[in-house]
Image (cartoon, rainbow, N blue to C red):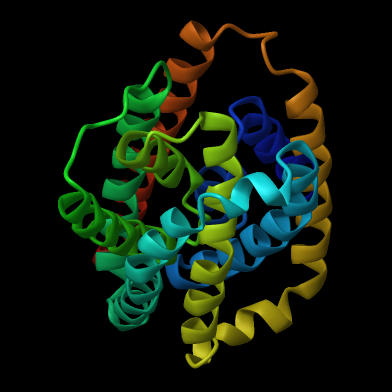
Length: 258
């Protein structure tokens, strides 16, 4: 449990993310949790990792600097909070087979986003009104994806903030945490109303050990930034996500046959 969490943390830390998208396939494929249970566990662990990362990010990017971009956070939250509630509501109502398929598709989309957004991103020139509407729409979509996968959504939030609002990527990383935290809490609150939420209480020790591993790995991954060139690291991680998606799809097929 600790080593798996550490591996996830290292992968996430090397690209500046929490790594929850890598943790989800492990929860299902390695530890044998059903899809919805894995999502709930992943959401709980992602929440703790984000809370742990927030003070470090605030030390790197002062709160006063973030305050100057409060409109960005509000704009995205206007959509992401609704998206998180809707995404969690859809997840708990899906049949297990359908949820496996959705998770597999989302992992492929995450791999594509990883490949497309790691590099120099130029801000889009949009009228204020169009940008506001686009921000709400993007926030809603990100909230849905984050809720269904149990992730923080930083891999989608950071490029969105850079592209829509022209914010420096370092500041965008901190803003993404400020947006993802309340978004995750809303999804978590919705999941807590479902009977599947009992999986969290029944596996508390598992969660604690894996979270400690993830935080430790993330710290190590941060130290390893730049050791592996992005030209090698990003495609490798995209392949890992894609392979995980295929395995999830096959897992879904076996479940459906049973």
